Image (cartoon, rainbow, N blue to C red; front, top):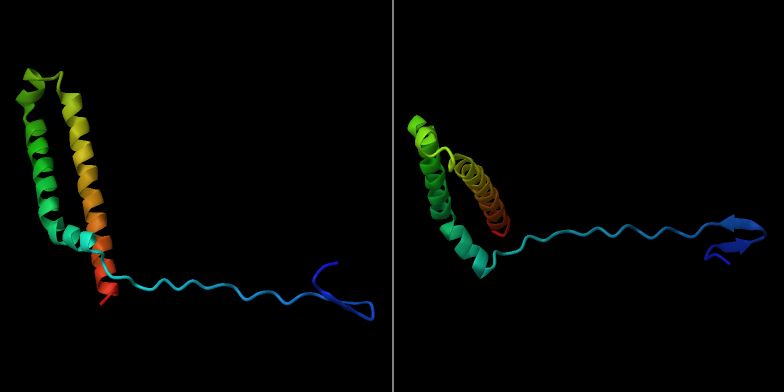
Length: 103
């Protein structure tokens, strides 16, 4: 028999349970995250320098004439470096948001 009550042949449905609302409390940055945040700007600058060097190398028309065999690998390396910079910026934004919410 279901958990509903029966009284005089009248069906009374059970009361629905209230929804559980999870409130995500802002948490403090861990020690590791604090150190990561402190070093993030330098890490991003290094990654951007790497992208700049690869772009400069690939913008030289003589590069494709003299080392055309290496070009596809360098182009793939450039795309990976750009993706890494984007990931670093996203992580930096996430850490900054977490830090500001915990204040």
